[in-house]
Length: 274
Image 1 (cartoon, one colour):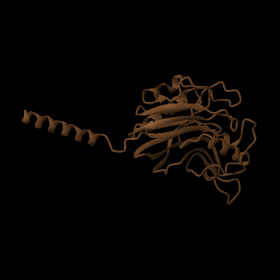
Image 2: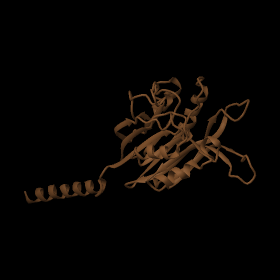
Image 3: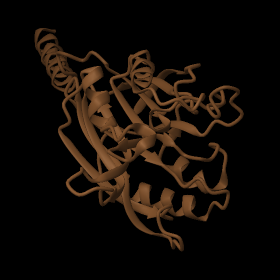
Image 4: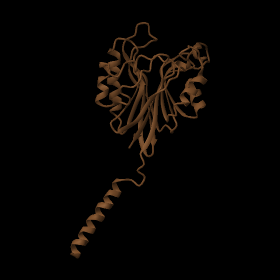
């Protein structure tokens, strides 16, 4: 009996140690709130440029990481030649990565270059960042053909010890879906290079059920299936602003915010990554 008891005790101790080795002492879930917002270059549904109003709308989301689309940096009169990425980061006290789609010569000698693209704001330090190329049909070329172009930003942030890859996108707006379909394939190839939890947000210019977005759902899932429409902001009829996550990310809840600080409504998702 004593030998049996000693053996049972040894087995129990071994199992306990193994469990302790597998489960970290600090096993609290890593909560992360993310958002996507097409800011319409700082102009509201009323077509009035007001970057302070844009900043207030973003602040009200209480998000940790936010993907922004249609961001001007010294672009033109419509946004007072402002560096919207840096100004918004300053107003909100966040880190920022700006990823231009277009990078053009200034209108006057000595002025900053004119840029337009996407930005990612983060409360967490940006441990890695890259502006990837995907297929685009330029709006600056009078006779464009589909070709690789930048404007698909990726950052990595660390949330309670877990590295999370966050991407923002703005897909082609034309009714013909061919370019969007190619962009989806390009994005999936880029996501496939990274390991660990992934969050892809943006203005997809297509509903989640559109055939050209179909390949996305083999690797990611829609965080807000059946959620409310996001565009146009005043009376939304289309849900084209999406948050998508990899299978190792749990969605606690989502919300679409009723604001007319842009012509799109922002979408927020509360997540758990482990």
